[in-house]
Image (spheres, rainbow, N blue to C red):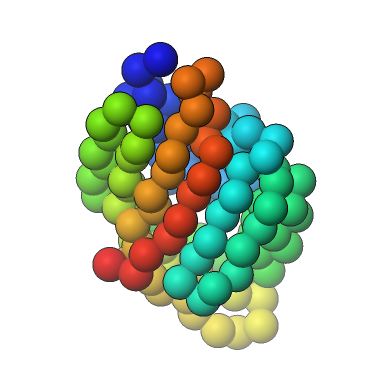
Length: 116
C-alpha cells in the first residue's frame, strides 16, 4: 500500500486538532509509541487513553501548524508546531517531528516523537 495518502489524511486530522480521532482511525491495535520524555505506550488503547487525557487538559488551541511531511516505503516523518493554553494556566508550545512506521495495510505500527 502507498502510505502517502494515509499520512496526508492522518496529518490533516492532527492539524485540525482531532488528535484522538487520528489515533483511533490510523493506529493498529498493537502500535507502540515513544516520545522525547521517555513516555511510551503499548497498543492503540493506551495511546487513545493518553491522548484523551492530554486533549482534556487543553483550555485553548492557539495554533497547530503542519509544516512538512515526507513518506517513503513504510516510513513517514511529519513536522508540526503546537501551541496550547492549558487548563492549569500553563502554555505548551513545541515544535516536533513525528516519525511513523506503517503496516502493509496502512496502519501505524510505531510512532516516535522528536523535538525539532
